[in-house]
Image (cartoon, rainbow, N blue to C red; front, top):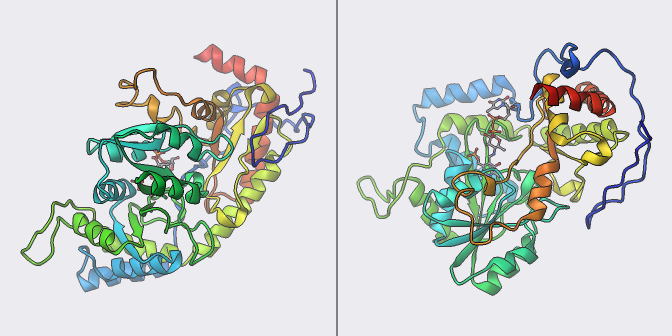
Length: 423
Ligand code: T4K
């Protein structure tokens, strides 16, 4: 095979990669996809939960049961909310049962209706939270360098029916907050940030959370700070906070008094106990995320066509996702074949957020006249591969997984032939 060099065009904000020859890794046995044994006996996941110190957690759970207050804003939920406001520097935090319901309530409290501009390159919950209440998501393209909404393309989609913008801080890297706030203000639109990935981005007191009208965190098990299931709305707007809290608790304003339409979006106290115990590890787990990212950067440095997404100032990111882009030409293997070969080794890489919300139902069946125009989203959907990280993954695991990526790439033709023969 000829020596390949990196030929990928660079996007603004990325460092120009140097051409580099393929280095052939030592071959230790056949790849699983070629008939060998899987390299890992136990799967390595993208979203394996970080588990807080169990003794402290068990003491908190005991206290919940002893106190007999399991839900309806018990003491642990209140402390959790306080801690989130302190860390983020945002005035109000309303803890929720999950991020999706938090987005739904946030959208409703903001009065979003008709059309709302949203990226298609996100977890489908961002779009579903709108559509669930009859709002039409209008999918906007992303910046291929950052994977976040492209403000210039947002402007072009605004119509008289547009009521708001929902931006996502994808992968735990800030979206262009100031630019989007300027557009929202100029055009009289509401602005909500889906910050499901973005807890702990930035230093304490200046963390992501105070952008737009409100922001929404997820504390799902797969997030690096988790409450098993959970989420939160954070906002600096007193009136909005009051409305969100009302909506989250059936609209109750007194024991027997309901003064607004509401649902049940409450976080329970067992979840908050998990959250508080997780928050005690915040700095430690951020350090693990950064350590793992550095280990992945080393492990992939010599692999042609597999590039770690490197956008954003390191101190502003939480690095909870390890996102690589695969250039099929430079790598000599497609992203999908690479992912499948790794999965056969029990390295459970993911294609998040393939194929893009616009290619999922109900959006796929109801494109606008002329179809969706999302070339950067399509391209990113073809290239992205998310790799295992978190406290369940060690540095030596990453070195081994990196060698596996290199071996799959080095055997790209054989792996492709094997996968295509079996399809
Ligand atoms: N907005 C954005 C941008 C989001 O990414 C999300 C959620 C939301 C909104 C909505 O927030 P929530 O309502 O979920 O709070 C997972 C998560 O379920 C989802 O929370 C997350 N984003 C999304 C990116 O990832 P799946 O369908 O990929 O989950 P699943 O079951 O395949 O799990 C992922 C990996 O984690 C697997 O390899 C297994 C492993 N895992 C998972 C769980 C739950 C574990 O090892 N242990 C576990 O307990 O969606």
